[in-house]
Length: 114
Length: 111
Image (tube, rainbow over all chains, first blue to last red; front, side, top):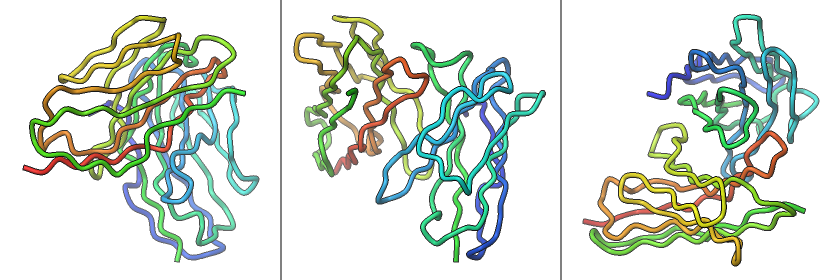
């Protein structure tokens, strides 16, 4: 158990819908990262927050947004969903913006868009 | 630019065989280097890391040495077990506040 929690574990929805994925980092970790893992794209970095502020952005679509709240939990919002958004979405946390610090991964949310 | 190249899988070995999974990187500086493992149905876990040249990371019988001369961080294990079956990711940290993951290598160990 990494100490990072993600909810829900599974999500099934239809095209065009909007969903919210939630992540609680390990106690004491200020940085949160979101990743998308799909069969064709591999593991892709989406976005990073540190203590409530966006720090780095990767291959995140405009239909996707995220935020980190004062209690440090984070939410990833996916809207206008398409079939191709079906993937595993991982959240990870670390003590500080990564510089040799280990990232701890949650168990992931499996999103299926029908 | 910065990039990582990881040995393509899948890799299938018999129990107690020797394992090598190659990982090389291209970087303008000296990244920290990580190996993560993903067991079936789970999230990624840090397996080992090395933060400077000639450092050796080790954990659970796995080892990897940071080779600056060859820009490599190959993962090795002397005698694999069925429980090592997983997907392994090489992940350099190039200093841009995110890890860059390799494509992953799926390892299957046969009893």
